[in-house]
Length: 396
Ligand code: NAD
Ligand code: MG
Image 1 (cartoon, rainbow, N blue to C red):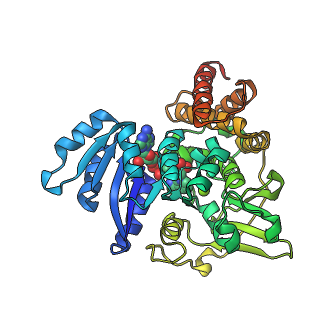
Image 2 (cartoon, rainbow, N blue to C red):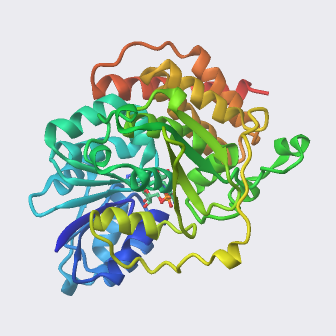
């Protein structure tokens, strides 16, 4: 029986994780659920899954939850960062699903890493921000790191065992690997007239053709910043040079990524676009469990197609690849800028095509300095947010 804590329990990945647990109730126990402010959703999850601890980051939300929970359920409600860090490091906890959205997920995820937990990593922003420090902390504590992001999970499944066992430190070339082929659907605007992009609304941007996801990652998929963040995520997880990583547009989202070997072999992982598959893979690795996902029907799929990304259409992807080549400081700046820009877009403050402009302005302007600690990273993140907020009003 694995005791699990789910960071971001009320979100899209949280729901999929709880769904996989429900299919396998004798193997997994919901020890803790963590969310920010969604009291009603958390209340429903508590009633359905009976965790030992329910944590609301927001204090007022914790108070409301405490008042609403039937005392017979005997669920402890906690709040604030200290209690959260206590929860993810508790001796009873085996596995932490890191699925808070954005940079705020970094500190609790890293604390779970340091405590040597089994980490199921969905929160890509945490790795994009802290890359090397995150990987080093994993190695020091012996934490098992498993990638939930469907592309990275696919790549992981296509890699030889010696690489799987040595994430972040592996030598792909020594294992005969020439390239990692990171696939992406191209999102809802792959074929839209370029002249119409500026007027695209948050509702249009969030209408992904294949995946159902939270609002931030949905917008990131429309700009393809998501693929950019994943490019950086892959760089750290698989210890690759940027020349070993290629982005391939594959609109059907059936192949979730591929690994190309020296001898000409390409190994792909396929499945329906449903996050319960990579989540179940991470939960059970190296075993396999039921996820509740329908088997892939090739006759329904019919065709698979591929094309190269158009950087003119997707400037955020180009910025992320550029930041990845520049290094850790640049990726921290880009991630923070993008979080502010996406939030502003979702709130109707800026247009869709201005997201890339805010990101570029920050990447060019925010002074980068070497980062030796998590405090340095958080300071650069905070500084970038201030600059990005100022930029929102001046960008055209
Ligand atoms: P979502 O918006 O649906 O859910 C976000 C969750 O984070 C919510 O439970 C929310 O309460 C919690 N949260 C937000 N701020 C918080 C805070 N300050 N403290 C504690 N909790 C907080 O997002 P999602 O789509 O589930 O994505 C979660 C993460 O997983 C993201 O980093 C995303 O990039 C990654 N991811 C998601 C998918 C997907 O299919 N949804 C796929 C791959 C990776
Ligand atoms: Mg992904």
